Length: 384
Image (cartoon, rainbow, N blue to C red; front, side, top):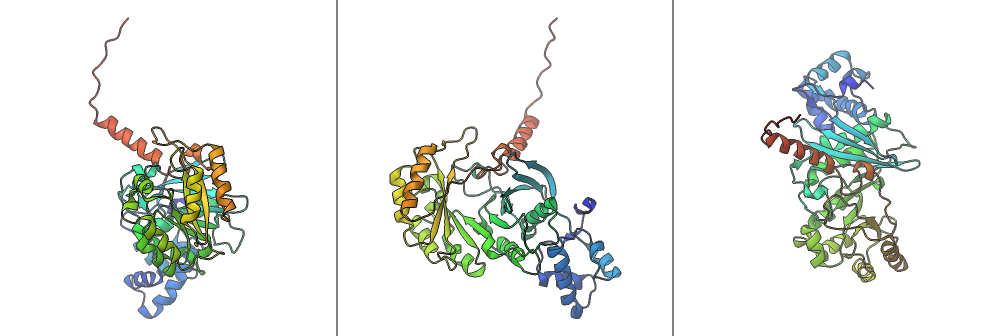
């Protein structure tokens, strides 16, 4: 791939993130007759989302004048990769810089013959969950559909998986579990997911896409009806008092409302269980009594529970539960008939584990800003 074409020239509009109707409108804008714009939009879609084209010159099914007209007005550039890191366990993390200078991170977590791309939906986060380092960062803005799906483009570029493979792809799954709360940016997230699922383009099955929410109950049912992707709930506590303390969103959408929304989720079944994510906090939510309460709380919901060892950071208010406590918790949940795998931490050495996204880049930026704002130190005398 021609890397020189991956960064946008000033003033050009990106076509990445547009749906078919918007691509047709873009073609009409540069003089393509409306009658033929629908067909040309279909061709553009194929080149952008199936082939991952980064240069209009690659689009050989379009005539030369049209390719030139497209190149004068539009771009296929990806976000700037400000930094790419690779973990000892094979995890990759990209810090992406968008046109306005804001940044977000995405992470690819490989397995033996496949892997999941964890994508962000916002710059920063508004939820302030106390166990999540990402949540200590203020919300800057929502990401647009183009910025969300562009994270997938960057990952596929890195692995050379264009055109979209029919099978055997490394990037086989998408998880909306990165920075931000996806359901607080529903329209843009939904648009990006629809692009990813389209069988004539990227073609990721809805069964291989998971959206994780901290519990925006009113939008959960809509998500299931309109997108039908897998649902993951960041639960982390079994009573309202504790959950409200560590997850302030619970004050607006308490457990009863959240679990009722889960019971109504259109795609929930034994074959497609809802995943409840549960971070293990030492002495906070990891007792045998908590495990038994969890089982009672989710009774009747087709579900599995992901137990997540807490990923600490300097100054974190919690500690990770002991291996013994996590194992005892898992045994109780398993005996009740629920799968309770313990999520193996991935990418900790590059701060790519759950709850750590972009935390290192924010710290570095704040440190630099702090240094610039401090007055210069007075010259020191040199002692002989």
